[in-house]
Length: 368
Image (cartoon, rainbow, N blue to C red):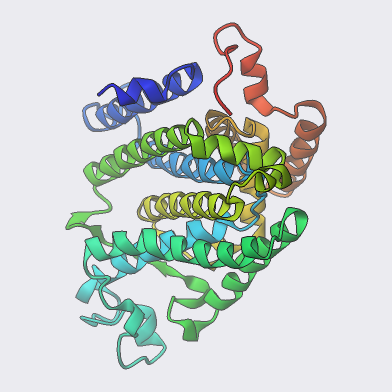
């Protein structure tokens, strides 16, 4: 019980963030389920689902901050790990549809029946069990990151070259998942989900449960990342980010530290994707789009690198603005997002977290 406050020692912003997450995890479902629509305190199911989606994005932003902010690896491919976790959960949800699909086939998902598939592909077996799906949510993004990182870090690929390679990775996966013969629904992806663990996804109780799970996952992800950054491994990561050659010269196994953190951040991104899919009801290859991965980097830059809570703030701020502004100015949103990134880079290099650190309450620095 003493480990929890120790992790957040000297981290006032993190303490506030965890408190807000726990409070929201109680209040939002409570105000949705226990108040009528006419009540001014009522939180609609749409709002609760939207907030749950933002929390998943915040967990994804923390994953990128671990790799970029603390290790100096500018990953432009974390959208791929997010999407792989989402597809693993989507495959489980598709298997739960059973005979309630359009074609009523007891084994094959609708898109396979439509494409005249005769049997379930081998890689779909096991996804009718929730535990197996959870295992794949962790293993698939983690294994891909481990293999990619082992090849890249052992070859000492760094800087812009590594960023381009991560971008190429997610682009290649996007092209592959667009193909119908891959067995992932092609450009339509996976959708028409019915229930999870026997609970209807249209039920307010299920939506509330998913929101609580997202809040707890973000809180746990933050604490895990804060524990790592405050440990000896975290200090080594900061040293690698600032002076990689010097860290290697004095005897540290730089490649091993990079591989561990990169794989861990990919697993976090996969968990975020798995929580995201049942709340939005669809997963398709556009989640692999390079633009999606670039947007994640902008969230972290706006919020503030190497702060963790800044990544959460950036993800929440930009996605809320996106929800509002894409409805009012759909053609101008990307220009505005690009301009915001340039302005923050020039005038606010430490992001929103830099402004918060200047205040008296958040002024004390946390280990980074």
